[in-house]
Length: 475
Ligand code: SF4
Ligand code: SF4
Ligand code: SF4
Image (tube, rainbow, N blue to C red; front, side, top):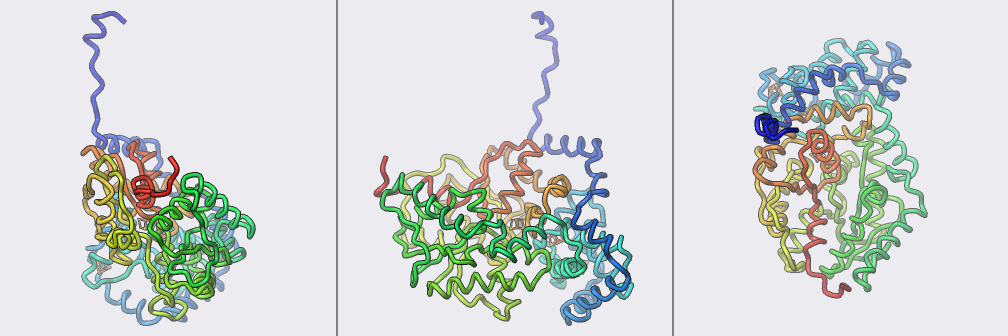
């Protein structure tokens, strides 16, 4: 290239990250990726639908709507005035050009109302649409409920559609496989009986390279805390276990981890509508803590697992509150800092933003505890807008990410609104997102990757482990 050419060639315009998100979304439209939503194949749904008969459809739908749902469903159906005030609350609606079919009430219209209007006489194709709406177009995130003047819980209505779909045998294959694994092996990842204690031993060994006295006390009776995790942790994010062990050790906690069945606190059956399995799995989790006579369960950094033990599973089993005291890691870490049991040697060198997991904010109100911890650990939290109780879901939750690869593109594109939120942060120089939820990490990672946002994700435990003082550690 000659000097002249170098000087006259127009410079590439420098796009902001927000502009990059918009450009990518336009390209996705041109490439027909949104249009492809209409013909996604899923063996679990497609084969299940092929087996449906008119009798089975009507009997199942009416069995659930008339036999299992009481006044709660009737009240919601009769109270909703179709005002659409909840529409702008939903990330699916906002990310799909405000197509009314993705609005909360639009999703109820395509499912529950259709079932009621037709007295359960849906065609197999309508059943197919209902399960796709319920399992892939709603995260049960409960954001819309906060904007309804009557407090109508759309997530409850959509959960009921999932229950019907499960009973019809038309659940997406990936999430059904996960729930089946949990039902058979008592953990969702088919971790074998010898693999789990081996993993704990391995993580203890890893931790002892740094802190020679470190132990992961297994099945210790009468401990103050039982720490429980989701089964994907030993499979995919194993280091979180030794990081937690270091935090418990350095804070001087009397703690244990269970190796008995019931150690996995996750629950995909809650999201498929297989409430019988959900109840059985939750009962095992409570019972393992009761057998060990621990004082409290500390749940790892996961949103849905917390919902399953603290809100849904306990109620299904007949308890308004869990039968044993339990806290999410967010509140546990906050408590450790308030009591001065963790000291920091350093701070994360940058400001961060905080993605609130729906299940820990709308389900438990832990947004201020999360910020208290994150502000101590970093140069400060810069808020996304909206945030805290009004945060947009990551679109992984409610079991949507667990529907697996067939639905991934739809899941990522249907959360353009979150990508825009993150891009605004990135344009303000924020490179790190703190989020105390496994599923949120999975969903946000996919969004970051698809829209080229170049951001890093951290659990609170990652930061505490990195930044805490560790007396007794070998250099
Ligand atoms: S619960 Fe969440 S995902 Fe479902 S309709 Fe409401 S806002 Fe949308
Ligand atoms: S659920 Fe509430 S906000 Fe939404 S359309 Fe019905 S009445 Fe309006
Ligand atoms: S994965 Fe996270 S943001 Fe998404 S529904 Fe669950 S808790 Fe909410």
